[in-house]
Amino acid sequence: MADNASYWVVIPAAGIGTRMGVDKPKQYITINDKTIIEHTLDCFIQREEIEKITVAIAKTDTQWPTLTVARHEKIVAVEGGDERCLSVLNCLRALSDLADDDDWVLVHDAARPGLNQSAIDRLMINLHTHDVGGILAVPCRDTIKRADATGKIDKTLDRGSLWQAQTPQMFKYAKLLAAAEDALAKKIVVTDESMAMERLGYKPVLVQGHQENIKITHQDDLQYLQSYFDRVL
Image 1 (cartoon, helix red, strand yellow):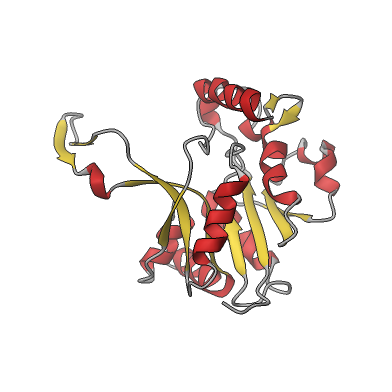
Image 2: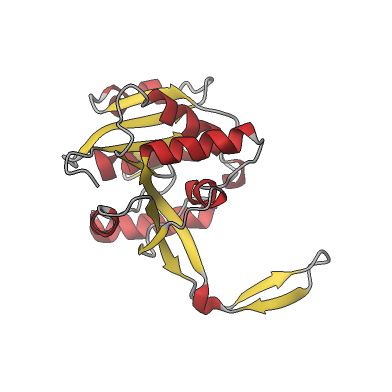
């Protein structure tokens, strides 16, 4: 990695989070007097090495402009897409006049507000000399079953080689942009950035994440997050 490489953050936040069963996108649920997306952005805003944070917002989003953080000097909002991967691609395209090819881009889910600074440090330290990048992840703790089409167990998988992917996922700007563009051109919906990179033959590095870095998806996750914030904030 070039010594002068910069770091950029991409936050796809155009989803509506229907599985939460609430009347607003989950990133705007309030915990401890802040929305989830504000907690998420707090993970990055004060880090000196981060140049800008691009946030993909739905075209019809009326709540984002009401947040004070939306006017922060480090944050740039772009229009999101119908799929997460399209929102990420729009953010990457918005960086085309700012980021160099070998700069690092950290893509992080808007609904992962429990990310700690040590995990970001590990990601940057472990990958700073790598030529592609990698992701935060945690080893699977439970026995994993693969189901057949009828909902019966087809096979028990060896959990020793299985990891649960998290974000941030950090890759070189030019390589990630090319991978995202290629997936779009071939009409393939990738569920994370690592999948896009893997399609082109790259082998991203697994970096130890942490259990609190969960993606808020269901109501029970809010209770877990509240408990976590009560301990650390």
